[in-house]
Length: 53
Image (cartoon, rainbow, N blue to C red; front, side, top):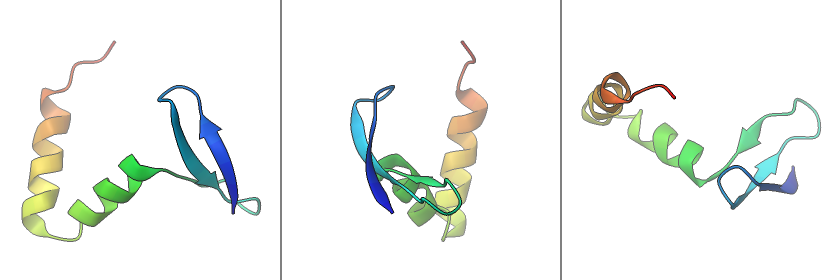
C-alpha cells in the first residue's frame, strides 16, 4: 500500500500497488456500517435518496 492524495475529495488515502484498490476514510466507514443489518439498511436508504449530478 502506498499513501495517495485523493484530490477530488481533498483527502489522503491508500492505494494497493498490486491490485489498484483505493482505501480512504469514507470507504472504511461504509465497510464498517455494512457489517450490521441496520447499518446496511441506513446506507441503502441514503443511496436511494441521493441524486445524480
